[in-house]
Image (cartoon, chains in turn cyan, yellow):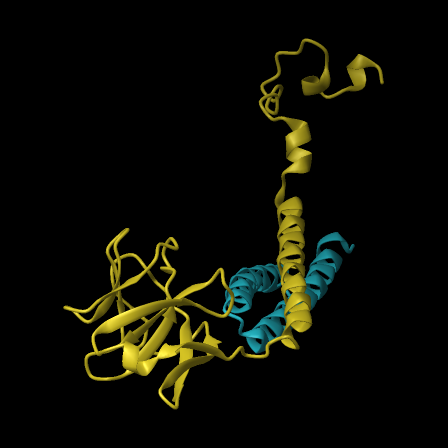
Length: 65
Length: 178
């Protein structure tokens, strides 16, 4: 089983990625660079999925036993 | 539980050393604001930020088909000598633009709202730069990128072509390289 700290690291890395992705998405949208908008949204959604599964992993480690 | 069976610190009005150690803690806050809640909030924030990008993609998808560049006649080349500039609107009437006939004979056009605080940008022919007088922002006339002052972003570039002596705006790039 992964150590709990690693789940924390994954979740906060995802948070940092999504802060950047939202900023880039807004900039790309107003710059009319629509291909970039889609790319950043996909990255952000993948990051959301990673954070969510990391949360489930952390929850299992934290509340298990 | 009878008093005599309790530990000393749990008895009423006791003077035991181990009493009142937690009186200064707000238990409700302790239950609400703890390590676990902090991590859950971080996960929530991650999800919220990620989902906040989705409306931009949806809007971009809806706008994508309507991107036909407008072809608009700006004026006659003969009416615009070198070192002069001409104001026009492109692609809509509410978006002011400037066409510059540079001293070395090139035609350069940009939307001329300053990318700092939207003041109009003028062509300064003596220094051959685009100048925003509000906060002394300078843009290169060759590529529209900021060269001095507060602006951080380039002016939107309007592509132009000359056909039979007439100058046409044929498209626009909001982001473009130097």
